[in-house]
Image (cartoon, rainbow, N blue to C red; front, side):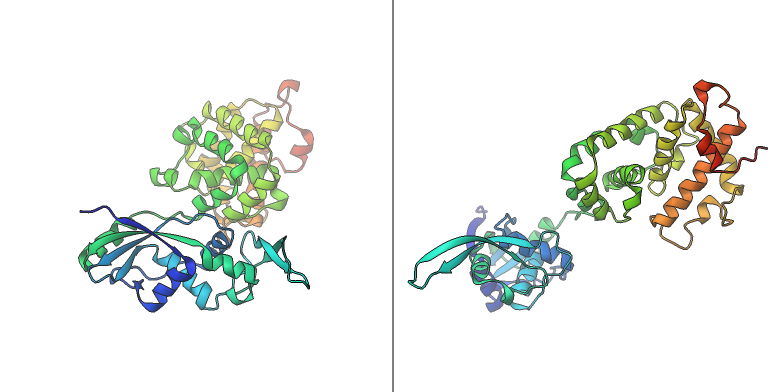
Length: 371
């Protein structure tokens, strides 16, 4: 079978071919349009800034009819913007589109000036003429498989769509490029491999990446807490520091030496960032790390099932009526855990010597009732 041929169209020509039916975007096995507005926004911005879009894969029947095998959602989104009066929403990340503005003086002389246009809440018809032209002249690359029938086109659709799209956590990770290397290094730590409780699927679906960014946010920027992964990544990309990631990496190395199988279950996709933040606070008390593991055992075996906070809630009841990532829930869980931890350490009387002194101001914040 011959290799597929490559064909490049202008955007205007490509979309008109779809409108005229020369290129069909309704193959029998093609999935329905599933893109959300955020995805359409970003595709429009990609075209207007002349950035790269992967080639559209087409299947050609003997009668020259073309069918889209891969790129149907992209094509439908572009049709919607060009001809469907789609309005770019306010959720777009970078709405300012730079372009060269054409200036003509009274004598007809033309000059070009640097300009920028905010596409937020704009349709195609509201674009300046220069950006309309840029959109229409964008080069759409296609790869065309020849001599196809419906069966072969269906085969190509299955082949090119046999992939798993990015989930929320994985896509959020693309917004923290400044510290992506730091996060990758942390993901390889023995703590996440051997001393925590994540399934193999969670390890490959961005859960640990989310745990890392939530922990950095909770430890260092809790006053600006955000519960959505994307919002956290955008904030940390602008406000986090290398030292914050280095400190977390150091904490994980210390935890590797003390966390055993009987207590590692607390470090799961739901509560890991809570207990990692608690350990950060523990490190400021000046006591032996082994005592943190002892506290976790006491918490798991005793406190978790019987101790209640000021609202009369067990630890696992705090988030029963709210999202586990709500700031009030996170604050309540941390407050309860820190109070129990300080009580536990005080009851064991490991703070008598100056070498193991727990901050007295911290102890005063919580009632200590030893039994």
